Image 1 (cartoon, helix red, strand yellow):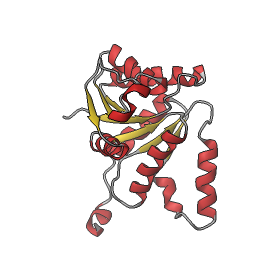
Image 2: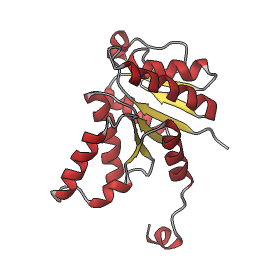
Image 3: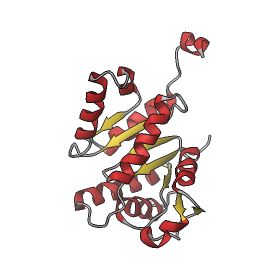
Image 4: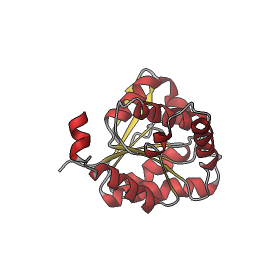
Length: 193
Protein backbone atom coordinates (compact mmCIF):
# COMPACT_ATOMS: atom_id res chain seq x y z
CA UNK A 1 0.00 0.00 0.00
CA UNK A 2 1.38 3.39 -0.98
CA UNK A 3 1.55 6.29 1.40
CA UNK A 4 -1.24 8.87 1.11
CA UNK A 5 0.11 12.31 0.18
CA UNK A 6 -1.84 15.45 0.98
CA UNK A 7 -0.99 18.81 -0.50
CA UNK A 8 -1.62 21.76 1.79
CA UNK A 9 -2.24 25.24 0.40
CA UNK A 10 -2.01 27.99 3.01
CA UNK A 11 -0.66 31.40 3.89
CA UNK A 12 3.03 32.24 3.93
CA UNK A 13 2.76 35.23 6.25
CA UNK A 14 4.35 35.15 9.70
CA UNK A 15 1.95 37.97 10.64
CA UNK A 16 -1.04 35.63 10.38
CA UNK A 17 -3.46 35.26 13.27
CA UNK A 18 -1.82 32.99 15.89
CA UNK A 19 -4.91 30.75 15.76
CA UNK A 20 -4.21 30.05 12.07
CA UNK A 21 -0.54 29.35 12.76
CA UNK A 22 -1.62 26.94 15.51
CA UNK A 23 -4.08 25.22 13.14
CA UNK A 24 -1.27 24.73 10.62
CA UNK A 25 0.99 23.28 13.32
CA UNK A 26 -1.68 20.86 14.49
CA UNK A 27 -2.53 19.91 10.89
CA UNK A 28 1.11 19.08 10.09
CA UNK A 29 1.48 17.02 13.26
CA UNK A 30 -1.80 15.19 12.52
CA UNK A 31 -0.60 14.31 8.99
CA UNK A 32 2.53 12.71 10.46
CA UNK A 33 0.52 10.84 13.10
CA UNK A 34 -1.72 9.45 10.35
CA UNK A 35 1.28 8.36 8.31
CA UNK A 36 0.40 10.77 5.49
CA UNK A 37 3.08 12.65 3.57
CA UNK A 38 2.69 16.43 3.52
CA UNK A 39 3.32 18.11 0.17
CA UNK A 40 3.61 21.89 0.33
CA UNK A 41 5.21 25.02 -1.11
CA UNK A 42 8.66 24.42 0.36
CA UNK A 43 9.07 27.43 2.64
CA UNK A 44 9.79 27.96 6.34
CA UNK A 45 7.46 30.94 6.74
CA UNK A 46 3.84 31.39 7.77
CA UNK A 47 1.32 28.61 7.97
CA UNK A 48 3.14 26.51 5.40
CA UNK A 49 6.36 26.58 7.42
CA UNK A 50 4.46 25.67 10.58
CA UNK A 51 2.67 22.73 8.91
CA UNK A 52 5.88 21.36 7.38
CA UNK A 53 8.04 21.70 10.47
CA UNK A 54 5.35 20.14 12.69
CA UNK A 55 4.98 17.18 10.33
CA UNK A 56 8.75 16.73 10.09
CA UNK A 57 9.32 17.05 13.85
CA UNK A 58 6.60 14.44 14.44
CA UNK A 59 8.45 11.99 12.18
CA UNK A 60 6.32 12.49 9.09
CA UNK A 61 7.35 12.59 5.47
CA UNK A 62 7.36 16.04 3.87
CA UNK A 63 8.03 17.22 0.32
CA UNK A 64 8.54 20.89 -0.44
CA UNK A 65 8.30 22.43 -3.92
CA UNK A 66 9.90 25.86 -4.24
CA UNK A 67 10.36 28.17 -7.22
CA UNK A 68 13.93 29.50 -7.37
CA UNK A 69 12.78 33.13 -7.42
CA UNK A 70 10.92 32.70 -4.09
CA UNK A 71 13.73 30.92 -2.25
CA UNK A 72 14.86 34.04 -0.38
CA UNK A 73 11.40 35.37 0.40
CA UNK A 74 9.83 32.10 1.55
CA UNK A 75 13.12 30.63 2.91
CA UNK A 76 13.55 27.03 1.75
CA UNK A 77 13.01 24.52 4.57
CA UNK A 78 16.17 22.48 3.97
CA UNK A 79 15.48 19.90 6.71
CA UNK A 80 13.03 18.13 4.38
CA UNK A 81 13.30 16.90 0.79
CA UNK A 82 12.44 19.60 -1.69
CA UNK A 83 12.29 20.18 -5.41
CA UNK A 84 13.46 23.50 -6.83
CA UNK A 85 11.59 24.65 -9.95
CA UNK A 86 11.68 27.64 -12.30
CA UNK A 87 8.05 28.74 -12.28
CA UNK A 88 4.88 28.82 -10.20
CA UNK A 89 3.21 26.67 -12.84
CA UNK A 90 5.85 23.96 -12.34
CA UNK A 91 5.39 24.22 -8.58
CA UNK A 92 1.65 23.64 -8.83
CA UNK A 93 2.05 20.84 -11.38
CA UNK A 94 4.48 18.92 -9.16
CA UNK A 95 2.38 19.52 -6.05
CA UNK A 96 -0.63 18.20 -7.98
CA UNK A 97 1.21 15.14 -9.31
CA UNK A 98 2.67 14.28 -5.89
CA UNK A 99 -0.68 14.50 -4.03
CA UNK A 100 -3.76 12.36 -3.57
CA UNK A 101 -5.83 15.29 -2.32
CA UNK A 102 -5.71 18.89 -1.13
CA UNK A 103 -6.41 20.72 2.11
CA UNK A 104 -6.71 24.50 2.01
CA UNK A 105 -5.93 26.30 5.27
CA UNK A 106 -6.44 30.05 5.74
CA UNK A 107 -4.40 32.11 3.34
CA UNK A 108 -4.40 35.07 1.00
CA UNK A 109 -4.52 35.59 -2.73
CA UNK A 110 -1.77 33.04 -3.46
CA UNK A 111 -3.59 30.36 -1.50
CA UNK A 112 -6.83 31.20 -3.31
CA UNK A 113 -5.11 31.07 -6.68
CA UNK A 114 -3.70 27.60 -6.00
CA UNK A 115 -6.97 26.24 -4.62
CA UNK A 116 -9.15 27.72 -7.37
CA UNK A 117 -6.89 26.26 -10.05
CA UNK A 118 -7.28 22.78 -8.51
CA UNK A 119 -11.04 23.38 -8.30
CA UNK A 120 -11.11 24.50 -11.93
CA UNK A 121 -9.18 21.40 -13.00
CA UNK A 122 -11.67 19.29 -11.06
CA UNK A 123 -14.56 21.09 -12.74
CA UNK A 124 -12.95 20.31 -16.12
CA UNK A 125 -12.71 16.63 -15.06
CA UNK A 126 -8.91 16.67 -15.21
CA UNK A 127 -8.81 14.98 -11.80
CA UNK A 128 -11.04 13.52 -9.08
CA UNK A 129 -8.86 14.34 -6.10
CA UNK A 130 -10.61 15.64 -2.97
CA UNK A 131 -10.33 19.34 -2.17
CA UNK A 132 -11.15 20.36 1.42
CA UNK A 133 -11.20 23.92 2.77
CA UNK A 134 -10.33 23.74 6.47
CA UNK A 135 -10.93 26.45 9.05
CA UNK A 136 -12.13 26.40 12.62
CA UNK A 137 -13.69 29.89 12.51
CA UNK A 138 -15.53 29.89 9.15
CA UNK A 139 -12.63 31.72 7.47
CA UNK A 140 -13.74 30.28 4.12
CA UNK A 141 -17.44 31.19 4.47
CA UNK A 142 -17.13 34.21 2.08
CA UNK A 143 -15.46 31.97 -0.51
CA UNK A 144 -18.33 29.49 -0.37
CA UNK A 145 -20.82 32.38 -0.56
CA UNK A 146 -19.08 33.53 -3.76
CA UNK A 147 -19.27 30.01 -5.23
CA UNK A 148 -23.00 29.90 -4.35
CA UNK A 149 -23.42 33.31 -5.99
CA UNK A 150 -21.86 32.07 -9.24
CA UNK A 151 -24.13 29.00 -9.15
CA UNK A 152 -27.21 31.19 -8.60
CA UNK A 153 -26.11 33.36 -11.53
CA UNK A 154 -25.92 30.19 -13.65
CA UNK A 155 -22.22 30.77 -14.33
CA UNK A 156 -21.09 27.69 -12.43
CA UNK A 157 -22.95 24.37 -12.53
CA UNK A 158 -24.62 23.27 -9.27
CA UNK A 159 -22.57 20.05 -9.15
CA UNK A 160 -19.51 22.14 -8.22
CA UNK A 161 -20.63 21.63 -4.62
CA UNK A 162 -19.67 17.96 -4.95
CA UNK A 163 -16.12 18.93 -5.91
CA UNK A 164 -15.29 21.15 -2.96
CA UNK A 165 -15.76 20.40 0.72
CA UNK A 166 -15.65 22.46 3.90
CA UNK A 167 -14.37 21.18 7.25
CA UNK A 168 -14.38 22.85 10.66
CA UNK A 169 -11.87 20.49 12.26
CA UNK A 170 -8.77 18.57 11.28
CA UNK A 171 -10.55 15.27 11.96
CA UNK A 172 -13.43 16.31 9.69
CA UNK A 173 -10.95 17.20 6.93
CA UNK A 174 -9.24 13.81 7.20
CA UNK A 175 -12.58 12.00 7.24
CA UNK A 176 -13.73 13.85 4.11
CA UNK A 177 -10.50 12.99 2.31
CA UNK A 178 -10.60 9.34 3.36
CA UNK A 179 -14.22 9.01 2.22
CA UNK A 180 -13.40 10.51 -1.18
CA UNK A 181 -10.25 8.43 -1.63
CA UNK A 182 -12.07 5.20 -0.81
CA UNK A 183 -15.13 6.04 -2.93
CA UNK A 184 -15.87 3.63 -5.75
CA UNK A 185 -18.36 4.90 -8.34
CA UNK A 186 -21.47 2.79 -8.99
CA UNK A 187 -21.18 0.26 -11.84
CA UNK A 188 -23.44 2.35 -14.11
CA UNK A 189 -21.18 5.40 -13.59
CA UNK A 190 -18.12 3.36 -14.54
CA UNK A 191 -19.87 2.10 -17.69
CA UNK A 192 -20.47 5.71 -18.83
CA UNK A 193 -16.78 6.67 -18.64
